[in-house]
Length: 516
Image 1 (cartoon, helix red, strand yellow):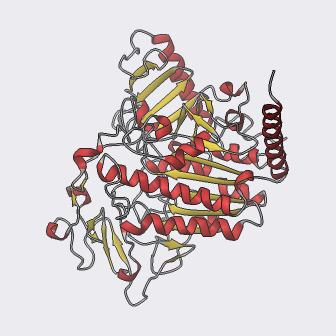
Image 2 (cartoon, rainbow, N blue to C red):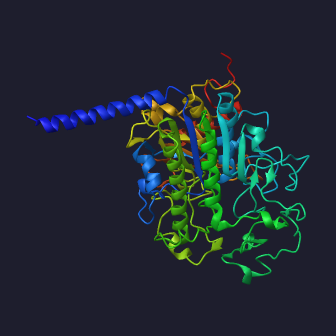
Image 3 (tube, helix red, strand yellow):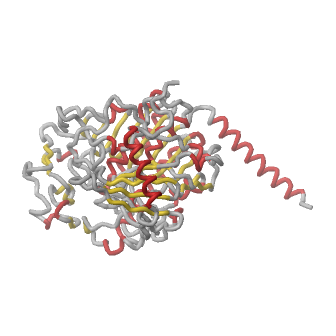
């Protein structure tokens, strides 16, 4: 028997739960807002909810606690630009040589402006669309290279984004300025910007010439123009008033992300929040330094988690959380690197970036492309849930389109699968994708997954007809320590034939090109 007090307490709890579900159902009668947060170089093991112990990620863990944690999510590439291309277009980047490699800060736009993108698909569905943070997909064209002193086009605004506040390439590449919509922020026209990835321009000191001016040491490839005491890849002169301060970057872009949310809340919105953290150079704001157990790398993970918390708080304060799909992931696996030396490098590896996975950023072992992926959508995604479905960030176009209840056009997302059922707990979700292709930098090496089997195919550029193979069964060998290419030739043949057919077809999404 239960007491009257216990009965009343249970009844109250049930009523509150029912009311919460009713509010969520009412909110979800309109298309959800979508906030996609893509971190840079965060590994599978770098979040508390994935087993990290040397860093604290309470805000990221909150998303997992209030939503779903995915165990088999992947970046479509083991490096940044191809992953971002795949996310934006729903197409594997190895299908387009302009987007299949890490780009410089003067590369032309890698995405064709007549191609459907995740932003244009949602804009057509009535969404306000914005990108804040890292871009790294190029500006301008081959015929009209980017000039950072003029209107910058084509760029994000030509791909379906209504608003853009972006870092042109990476934190370790010039130009070290922000671009808002089509202009460099704070540029003095009397101090024009010049950028080169070949010969030196201007008189700015470089890391090679003046290492005594550096606040953190750098290797030779990162020792060109010094900006804010940090030497970069490439040469830059001018634009001094517009140059960023690394320590303030997270604050700057987080504030811009929140501002976009606040002014877009009267209609459904899509925000692509693309953080700089934790890409090198890792230069945390002073309030985060020393807060982790693994040096500045851990400190910028804390800084990243703070940024995510600020976005979650903004959704709460504006009454938007219950009808917003929030997703956090990473553009590739984590890495322990020594390209920069901040004085705490010896502590960085105390937090293994990819947990027990083999490999790191740039590799086609699991540590290079299996990424953390957590999602929250109150009333649709069950709290404290998990998913073991296999999918990749290239699937976000079809997934967001489904969340917005918009049919994906026949010519959109040639490699994008709708994995929303996996996120909302559909029992049949495990069969959404029966294959997945990943790449490293450039397209000479590809990997294909089918079930537990994974084949890595390397075609040397000078002899593409002489591939080498590595074959693994991830169920039996999650560490990828036993190459089965000789023991299982039929499985190798099967997977290689599947890969060749996917390459030859030019698409892999069911229904692509079909007009209903």
